[in-house]
Length: 203
Ligand code: GRF
Image (cartoon, rainbow, N blue to C red):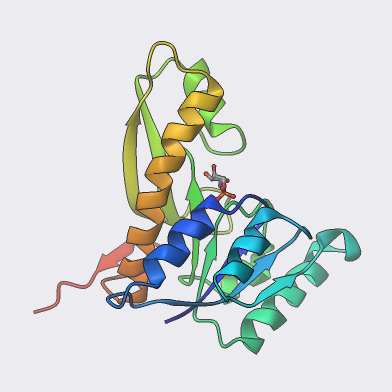
């Protein structure tokens, strides 16, 4: 399965996905990495791994629709079948999400549906919960509300700061995202018409 990874920054999730898809057993091949910001570390990671990169700078577009259609053109150019949003900090428009429905995966640093939106790690600390984590889900038009594919729980320690907790969650992300990508790329999991996950109970 041909995969595109969309990034906005450091790319540690991208790094984990690249390491996973390099394995002979992988059902996925990353064919392009697209960033909405130039010069970010994630682009260097992709280049060092020999993966083609594109920058689609959202500041150069007059509207979200024009930005999204440029992203779409790049995806079509590379024959992409699955898209991973890995620290991609843009909200995608309805038409784009609908076109790629069931083919768009995102990682969020909380156990959805808790703590949607930005600063999910900080929300968990402020809520004084004892467990949080990360979620890989299909992207739906409503932000952080799509069908959940994989989750991993992470303890919150009494002396945790936003940074120490974020680092622990990121380590979980680097396990959860590759796992979710393989499940979808291999066909073990797909998004049903009703918006829920269907597990392929192969005979
Ligand atoms: C991660 O914390 C992820 O939960 C959030 O953005 C961050 C991506 O980090 N969506 P990186 O660019 O993959 O290192």
